[in-house]
Structure formats: structure tokens, C-alpha cells
Length: 197
Image 1 (cartoon, rainbow, N blue to C red):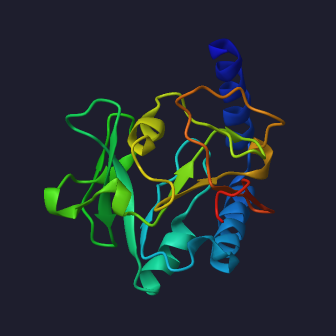
Image 2 (image 1 turned 90 degrees about the horizontal axis):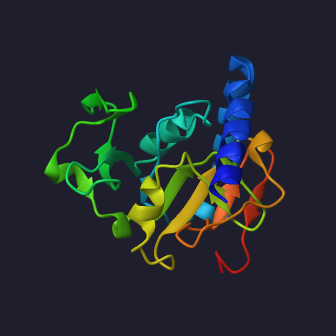
């Protein structure tokens, strides 16, 4: 199964990286509109987001909107002690940013800026590929799966963000894979059965 998952990762990472700058910009605006018009974020005040990398959908337009509406935005930070886990830190226009070991910008670690993962109302997660059953294929590091494993899905909604070209027919899922409550793309919102009931 590992070989097939790695092959899928390569295929879908290539697909999203091949999108033009104009296509990426259009996708960012379309996903922003989808999120704004959807009930997925109704009553959400503390929202986990991400900064795009490797062709991921850019959430910057949506983050800007959240700031304007007075919502709290949190970004993932590589955990300095628990290997392979993430922390979520407060993110605002004045946040001091540093590059992590993957070269991805993240908020500078400050204990007072940490929001416990279970306290986030919604977590918007990047992904490499998805299917209509809520399956998510990530980059392979397992960071989100480990971090979300102990979180009550009744309290926090895990929403995958992707380009339409990242949709697969059916993904080979592992026991540790955390299914998404929904997947949002520029053209559609897929909710998994009962996940948002």
C-alpha cells in the first residue's frame, strides 16, 4: 500500500504544482468564496489554517477576511518536543515568522500564543489528494494525523482544502488516517456522511 500511496502523492503533487499563477490565484479566490458562503464555519471563532506550500491552495484571501471579521486564526508549528506533532499558534499581521526545517514560514514559538488543538472550532488542512468519502492523503509525514488523533471530532471540524485536480476515485487509507468532515475545492464542497450532522 505504501508504494501506491507514494505514487499517488507524486501524481497529485505534480498536478497541483503545474497549475499556473493565474489558476492558483483563481483557486484561492474561489475557495475563499466557498468557505464564506458555506455553513461549515458557522459560529467558528478559532480557526486553524495554513500557509500554502508546494502548490497548495492559498488561504491568504480567506485569512484576510477572517482578520477583518475579528476571528482568531492559528497556524501549525512543528512541535519542538513531540516529534512528528504540530502545535497551533496565534497568527495575525504582526506575528513574527520563522522558516521551519522544511522552509515553510510559521509563527515564532511563544507559549502564550498556543491554542490547544481541541479548542479550535475548525481546522483547515492542506492535502495532496482526496476522495468523496472524506479520505485524505497528506505529504507523508503524518503530522496532521498524529496531531488530530486525540481530538474529538464532535467539537472540531477537520476540513480539507484542495484544488479540483487533486480528487481521486478512492484512496487507499491506513488505520491512522484521520478522515475529513468536508473537503472544499474551487468548484465544490464535499461533506462526508454524518460528519457535519
